[in-house]
Structures are given as structure tokens and as C-alpha cells.
Amino acid sequence: MKPFSIHIDETGDTVTMRLEGELDIATTAGADSELRRVEQGGARVIVLDLRGLTFMDSTGLGLLVSAAARARGGGHRLAIVRGPAAVQRVLELTGLDARLDVIDDPAEARADHG
Image 1: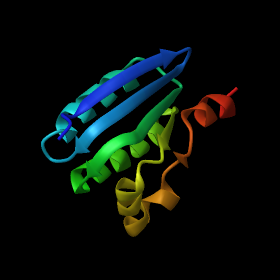
Image 2: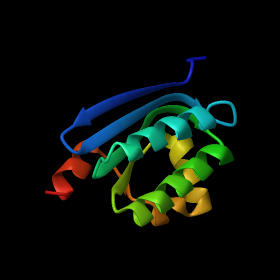
Image 3: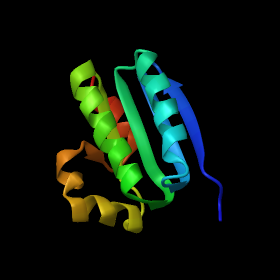
């Protein structure tokens, strides 16, 4: 099993956070802490790339919902790159795929806010 990791790429006013491994009760707090640090950095667009996740539980969903609420209140965009089938299924079953800003490619987020 691949350990959980976060890779951050800052390009202009867009920050992409690529999550890899399992986003679950053991890893969500660290991911949330890193996400809040990025939010405080003043990025206009934050892209959460879920393509590297192998698993996401309800705590991961909670992270996405809270981050989306903070984005709406904070005036920045949170775009979520569609994950693999198992991760995407969790979003679809909960209806969050329709409520969150879900995109297919990180480049879409950068292209939209010009």
C-alpha cells in the first residue's frame, strides 16, 4: 500500500494539491492542515487533484465539503479534479459530485479564471 502524500505546485495565483494514497481518518487531519495553510497563502484558485487517491472515506468527504464552504466564504475557487472510479463513486453516491466544482483536468481551473 502506498503511503499518503501531498504534492503542491504553485503557478501564479493557482495552487494545485495532488493527493496520493488513502484519504481517510488517519490522513485527513494532515491534509486539512496543509489545505488551510495554502488557503491562507492567498491563492485565487486551489485545485485538489484526487487522481492519485486509492481510497476516500467519509472524513475525506468532510474535508472536501468544509474546504468548499471556506472557498465560497473566502472568495477563492476550489476545483476538485475527478478521482479514480472508486473515489468518484463515493462523490456520486453522496450527491457531492453535483454540489462541488468537479473538473476533469487541472488545466481547466487555470483556464477559467483569467
